Length: 512
Ligand code: SF4
Ligand code: SF4
Image (cartoon, rainbow, N blue to C red; front, side, top):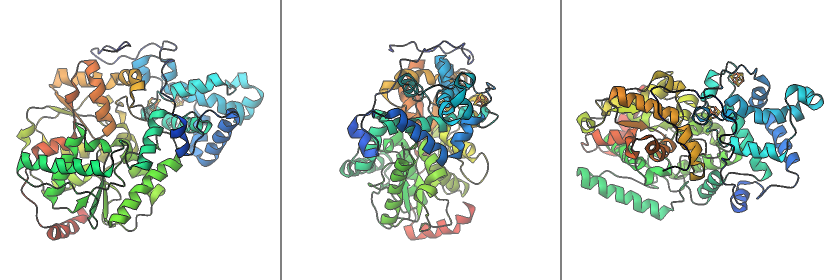
């Protein structure tokens, strides 16, 4: 099945002894000039690339205080060394978070610190050579920017930030990653990562309406570009066609239907994902985020709700206001933005949704906390809401639920192995190996708790698990969307009129 050795699942997760260079051969395809240039980067490696790279490093150092602090503060305590799923899965020492950081830190020291300039050998500083640049390209594309290592670092050093900075430096010299940069080009031209044009989107949504009506006898709508709707749903484009994503979209539509909500999607902002974050580009991240603002203004909505997508929720929760705010034209009684799990959870709390949980009795569920949701966002108004709310939604729709071992969920969750812009076939080996800790945890609850399915609220996690779980002896349909579970169990009763429901929403807004 694979042209590389797939790690074996054991009784418990083992941290390997390091073996130099096991993943030195792995690097993603480089973006062609036609995908580099629209993002504002040179088409190929520029002649004076060392100087351009150092200028960019200097620029990042002055723009982001955290970048310099992270490069200065490491004391080499080693607490992060065994915390990265890519190290655990590959044994390559350059996949230890501290070693990954050091690839950049050594160059930073050489050019930006007194000791590095005059006594480079004493402080491990190195010149920026082509070999160093190649190493950056290889190993900063073996980091999913999951931030697990930062949880264990006594100084809170965030390797994800360093990895984003490294990718931005590489882009600035003309060495961008094909997968991420091509996808951003599609968003700028068409509106979404998959390059689905408006007509295809309309057809898909019409097809879903027919399918749900045939299935349930209820006319659940999937509105697109509906001016004057109250809610704009921004969701990952994977939700428009692929399983299990589309089953989640059907779930959102059923929830909106039951709430009697007036809602719409936008063909202009038909993508929740924002790969600008993966390549560390504030400018490109902002360009994508501004599409959501424009769609919200053009459609005249009062609320923005995000569908199931991990990094999209991070960009939305943590950066949307800075990138594209102020959102003072939205209804201030609701969070800006809101996650679909928060939306559904609030309705559950208000007893506005009814479920027949037995519809999901053929499954025993567990939940995969997605990295960006777990370690970079929150949901609801209580600490830990990002862990509790999705679980509460699952438990409202399912009778059988078992959590994976505590050191693999919540804040300590392990990445799916495909995040951070690595969800591409040219990185399949690192994706499979990086999924080892999650697969091991899934095996534990399969063996001990009878778990049959794993739910997630991230489009990347779902796509990644669909592809990599079979390497570990699971089947691809064992990964499900949280709102797929909602969709299967929700009892459709027909909706109140929109006017009534608007009033209901306002009456209940204080509880949200
Ligand atoms: S951010 Fe995640 S992928 Fe990157 S080094 Fe840390 S643990 Fe590994
Ligand atoms: S845990 Fe933090 S301080 Fe310790 S080696 Fe890792 S990055 Fe450096």
